[in-house]
Amino acid sequence: MRSSCVVVVIAGGTVLDRCVEALLGSREGEAATELEIVVSAAKSASITPSIETTMGVRVVRSADESPIALAAAGISAARGDLIALTEDHCVPLDGWPASLFADLGRSGVAAAGGPIVSPVTPTSFDWAFHMVDFYRYTPPVAATPVDSLSVCNVAYTRSALERLKAEWQDGFHETRVHGMLREHAVLMMVPGAIVVCDRRVGRLDGLSERFRFGRLFASKRFHSTAVAPRLAFAAATPLLPFLLLARIARRSCASPRLAGLFARSSAYIVPLLVAWSAGELVGYVTSRPPRSSAAARNRLGPDEPIGALFKA
Image (cartoon, rainbow, N blue to C red; front, side):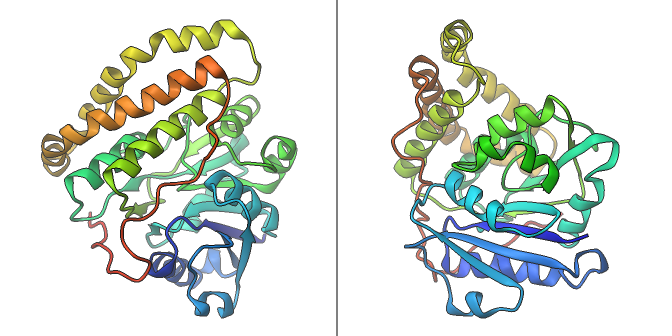
């Protein structure tokens, strides 16, 4: 069975190189020898020339630089029967694609995803930014059906995506797609399919992104335009920062390292949660996405050194 991995380019440069190198290494495994790699990038993105000449790697360019548009373009271009999806600031650990693909198609599993971990030495803000986005996927996680998966670490059967193509072909909104998949299939968590997310953005850029992505999430959360549920969720948004902070704190108690990072990063976690919640409020009230869904720019240049990876 053919398989593909779509890499959405957020940072580019050596960050993308590191991700692709990890995927090329994974192709040495028996189950991943036929893995096709599709790099989906904006026309302005920085891509090392060697990426475009590497055997088995295809580059797809888009005029729209938003992650949702790039994900849709990459998935449309992929040729595999099984399609994994990640972003270039993520580095898959050994066995990643094979672990995800192994569960697909079993017992109605249409999508499988895994844990997302932070680098060894993140700054306080970097870790706060990471946890606000990925606390649900921070180990330990169990091999069980789940309500949500992240586009940074997920794989799908092509047949499941094709049935919903009208929904995602103009922009892959994971909230809507995963919600529709759950109506007839299973989303499965795979503990051994780990990626390291090493994303570095500026503080103001990070706050702005959280607001815009919160608004995007809320505007696409419901399949219908019914007013009542939107207003109900809008009325509850003042409580959302407290609820999310409690969830992050509980997940951080899983290890002394995470507890220490939480203690020194909470001053950044709170404003990031408030920004997200404010975005949700606007999204519920207006039912409209933000004008721009572009990701915040990497604060490091495309060729600057990047951090140490996760170690168990």
